[in-house]
Image 1 (cartoon, rainbow, N blue to C red):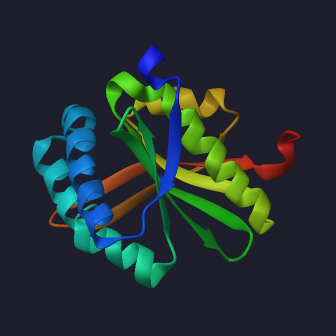
Image 2 (tube, rainbow, N blue to C red; image 1 turned 90 degrees about the vertical axis):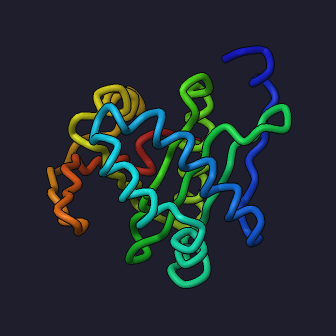
Image 3 (cartoon, one colour; image 1 turned 180 degrees about the horizontal axis):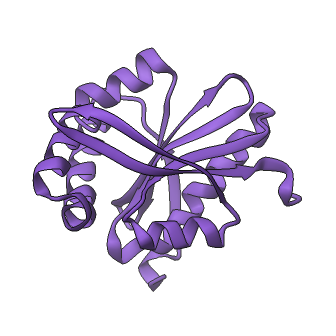
Length: 174
């Protein structure tokens, strides 16, 4: 972590302006990271379908998602999205950080852990593209375990080929 990133804070996304800025951040991060994994066309499709300002607003306002941004030195460096499922699982739907700031992903993961504990969840679950070897290594390092593989048709001839990871909330003391 660089000296500029030593001081960061997490911010909950709530306003329309924040949602618009978050969608722009998603384009930056996804294009940087996923074009080499799933290709530019699928990346663009997924951004428009799942990370547009409209999609993010719907997640927050209709589906109960919580979007959190990590910010340092006035710059948004990454974000996460979580939602509680069946009162037992916190689904970490998104955790994306700019390449030069990846060390801050831990702050977003720790925030998800705190959310899960506060809600009385038993586990955190998340999905990772099977070809995303860097992220897979990070989640395994954090103690996440692969519980299954899944292939989801997301339309337009595209699929998400993922590992589903689980992290038991009470595996480590606070």
